[in-house]
Image 1 (cartoon, rainbow, N blue to C red):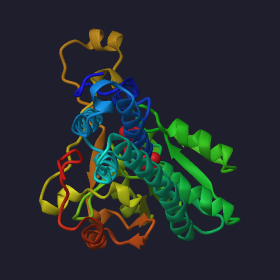
Image 2 (image 1 turned 45 degrees about the vertical axis):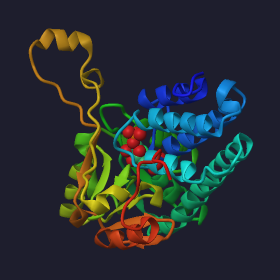
Image 3 (image 1 turned 30 degrees about the vertical axis):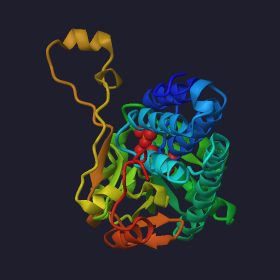
Length: 323
Ligand SMILES: O=P(O)(O)OC[C@H]1O[C@H](OP(=O)(O)O)[C@H](O)[C@@H]1O
C-alpha cells in the first residue's frame, strides 16, 4: 500500500459499490464509512503511514476519493465520507486512527437509529388494512411498512418489478418474510393497480433543496400516475439523503448505466444499429410528492430546505477537503 493507493478492503468495497453488489443509498453509506475505518486500521499498521500523521491523513483522503468515484447519484455516499473524515483528529497516527474508527461506529449507529425512527413516522401514515405499492428496493421504505406491521396493522403490498435490474424481487421477498402478502407486477401494470392501493411508498437516493426526489428510474412516472388516481405517495428518506450542494444551486448527477442491463447481447446483435440508454434514476418534482418522511418527522417536499439548512448550513465541502 502506498500513500495514495487505498488498502485492499477499500478497493474491494469501491468495486462492490460500482458493480452494485453493495447497493441502496443507506447500505452504500454504511459500507463506505466502514471502508474508511478499515483504511485507518490498515494505514496505522503499514509502512510510512504508520509513523507519519500527514501520510496517514493523505491515505484517508485518497480512500475517500476512490469510494466517492464509484457512483454519482446517491448523496448518502459523500455525506458518509464527509461525516467520518471531518471527525478525523489527533496529533499521532494512533489518535487519528481511533477518531476514524469512533466516527464510523457513531455514524453506523446513527443510520440504524434514523431508519428505525423514520419507520415509525412512515408507519403512522398507514392504516390497518391498507395496501401499499412499492418501487425498487429501499430499506427506508421497507422500514415504514415493517413498522406498521409491528404496530399490529394488516398491510398488503403491490410490488413493482423495477426494470432493468428487477430490484422489486428483493422487496417482494423481504415483505413476504415480514408477513406482508405480496403481489408482484411488471412496471407497466402500475397504473392499473393504483386503483387498488391506498399508498405508494418509495425511497430516495438524494433529495434536492427544492424538494425534488431523486430515486430509481420510474419513480416520477409512478408519482404522476398516483396523483392522477388520487393515491398519496411518500418518500422515506433518512436525512443522510439530503443533498447539501443543491443548496447552492448544483444539480444532482443522474447515473447512466451500461446498456447490457437493458438488452442482452443476442438481442442487441439481432436488432443492429440502435441507441440504448440506461439512466438509473429520475427526479420527481415536489408537486407530485405528498410527503418526505425522515427521522425528524414528515415534511411537505417544499419545506425540506429548512431542514437542510438546519443540518448542513449553507453548503458542504468535498468530503476529503482539508479542514
Ligand atoms: O437507502 P435505501 O432506502 O435502502 O435505498 C434508497 C434507494 O437506493 C436505491 O438505489 P440503487 O439500487 O443503489 O441504485 C433505490 O433507488 C432506492 O430507492
